[in-house]
Image (cartoon, rainbow, N blue to C red; front, side, top):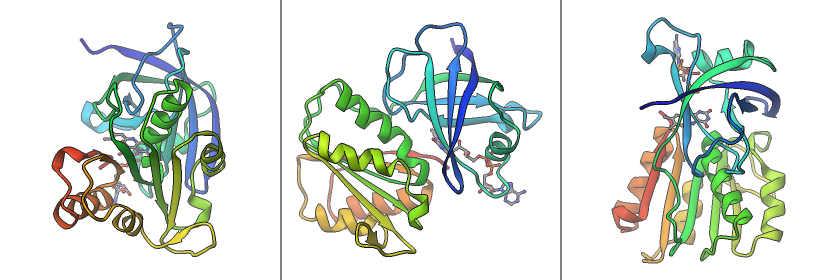
Length: 240
Ligand SMILES: Cc1cc2nc3c(=O)[nH]c(=O)nc-3n(C[C@H](O)[C@H](O)[C@H](O)COP(=O)(O)OP(=O)(O)OC[C@H]3O[C@@H](n4cnc5c(N)ncnc54)[C@H](O)[C@@H]3O)c2cc1C
């Protein structure tokens, strides 16, 4: 049976000009268990009917045996839920939500190199997975995070991922900026990076894609049709 919870907002921080980090403390439990990569679904006061009010958000923090969750949310122009969260929600606001849900998670034993490809807030489940692997010292064959956005002020969690490249053996971090060039970031799209780095079909890589339909559709087509990867080597979570 679906379990509903109440989450109270304890902190809100700007992450980019259009993105905020929200921290929710789950009422009535000491710990909120979830798997890295899963999402929650909020019931927000933005419509009469249930299907108008429900929006899902990936958990951006890693499972840490507490009742605190972090979300990373972008404000879409004219977006009802993101508009409400940015303009109405405040510290102390209570939000009804259900979850955790979703199968966009890592396997118990990680046998392949992981290539995590995202744009914007699609980084949220990957942040959870990467910190989970790091905190639990889960053995991997390497993790490559490929993050894309338009300009450098849209890069999310940049400092912590850059620091993690020093602390986590086998962790690589690439940033693609579609509208800006600089010496640390690729000028172009996320697609350019995996097309170049993973050409020549390899059996020991699994690709995880997360974000909006356009990027995910293009990446699935590139990886499977153009590059010849097996369907089972490409997993994705669509935001809409
Ligand atoms: C599993 C899952 C996980 C997700 N995780 C995240 C996450 O971690 N972070 C995140 O930011 N998002 C995430 N999403 C997306 C999120 O659920 C919402 O879809 C997103 O916040 C947009 O909701 P909204 O109500 O603001 O926009 P909506 O009101 O649903 O609008 C959607 C689009 O339509 C346009 N639109 C709306 N109203 C109008 C209008 N009147 N005229 C013209 N255009 C209009 C908006 O500009 C927007 O582009 C996730 C989605 C899924 C399915």
